[in-house]
Structure formats: C-alpha cells, structure tokens
Length: 102
Image (cartoon, rainbow, N blue to C red; front, side, top):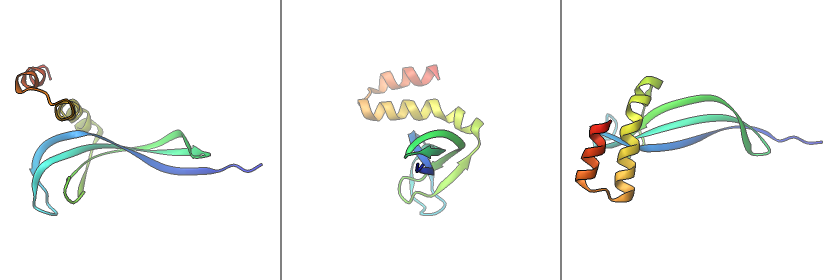
C-alpha cells in the first residue's frame, strides 16, 4: 500500500490594516494582514497543523514583516472590518459606527 504524505502551507489574507510606507519599495499603501498555517497532509488533504505564522505584507512588492500572535489578534478585527467595507461597498456612516464598536 502506498501513502502520500506532504507538508505545505495554507495562507489566508485577512484584510487591509494600516497605511504605511514600505521599507523595500517606499510606496505608501494599506498593508495586508495574513495568517499562514503549515499542515502535514495525507493524500493532499491537510490534516495536522504544525506551525502558524502571522505577518503583514506590502501589496505592491510583497515585502513582509512578521508579527507576534498578540499583535495579530489586536489587528484582526480592523482587518476584517476593512475587508468587509471594501467587498460590500459600506457607507462611511456604517463603517464609522462599526469602527467605534471595536
């Protein structure tokens, strides 16, 4: 019997967070928050998570800065709100109301 094992990451883009200047390309854009989870897989199906990385990246050149879990957790609600605002075309009034609740 043959078993196919693997080890690969799955990266999720949470959403845009803060606008800042990139140290690499010197563009000023809203950086994107990411969560990358590495899995052991069996027959290309991810089964066991082994490691999690948190980082933010420049949307222009993909330069990234690692984050600790606490920083990620503090920025995650804002990133989710910003992503929803862009996808749903949220009004400024609704955005500000939800921002105050954070």
